[in-house]
Image (cartoon, rainbow over all chains, first blue to last red; front, top):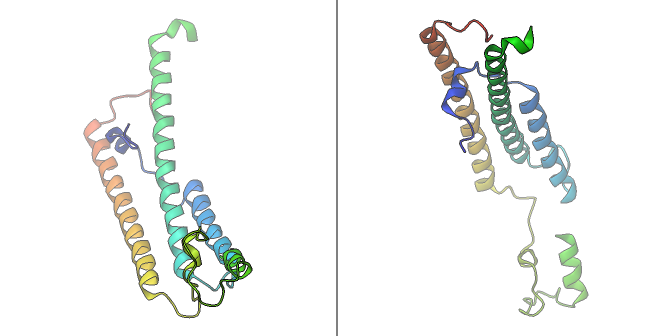
Length: 92
Length: 83
């Protein structure tokens, strides 16, 4: 199972800043802050490289997940409209 | 990590004696992390990886935009039911 099939590129790509990427980026940043707290370091000022890395990783994963979600929704919509097109009597 | 050090003190091994195999359960008992001196290798790798991730993401997004426009032109929008 491919994560993003080739036909997903026929869809308009979601904007880079979207709900999924922002939320997971924020979650990654929070986990870096939590790591600081658990290791008794200053929460915001310590390990900035860690905060940046985890936030970027979260943003990246969120964006890929949103792309896959949009592909799955578009596929279901296409199948739905094809069914409606083939059974016009049921939808008068 | 602090809990592991407390356990070592409880076993009476805090006087720089290496833990014997029978007592060793965690690899983290061996060294104490020094947060005062930056681990420059780790910092460099973290920033480098972040930069590479962003570069890849932005490039992939631009490529996807170009590919979508190309496919839209090629399709000529024959299908009228889909948006």
